[in-house]
Length: 266
Image (cartoon, rainbow, N blue to C red; front, side, top):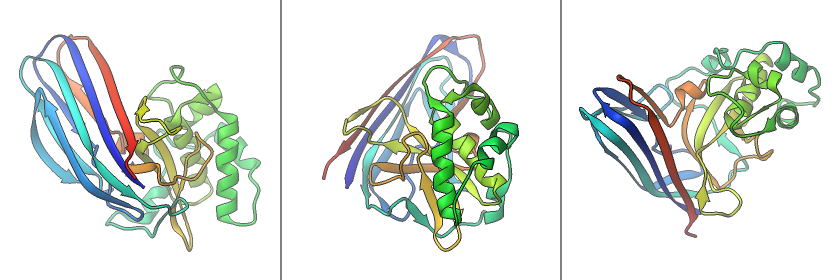
């Protein structure tokens, strides 16, 4: 499947911003089942300072705000070819050691809530148990927008009983690491419900299974990632794979508007 993606994020400020920076991870990865035909990123209201590939092999761009800016616009667009791999990304690659993905973070530290989910897990293999875990997390945490906080931990989401894709991924990752297996967070694009217009980027998780390598799990939609999923960034949790992270000085209030289209070309 060939997907054409157009993603615009517009930040508007109530007064001029004296200084700010944005870190952007919006370039799809080159990976099994995914090849980038064309991709470009442009930013209005800021100047690129540096770009590099980080320790997770995410392509990162750093921008500084133009002095006195009142609007910042980030546009990313391009074409990606996708092949169905049944959710299997394959062997671990890169310089980051596999054991690092077994390390708990502030967002993915398993506590009482996660351990309660784990006690119910069934299966005669790691892969079967992971699918069972995905289903149980999906059942335990209702998908509800506008009721969670970006700073929530896995335990916060379990206690609340609701959350969004970020929370589903964090709970799953926390549980997988508590099982003694490596796990990581994935941010990217999803062409959902056969529609071009999408409300936001998406997040899911991957676990490393002996003999298969990295395997994807979309807990929110209770399926394995297929040709509709475009992997953009990975990390130990949301903080290492967020599409855009920024800091700014001043007292200006900020509003954000996102336009995202994921279109099937063939």
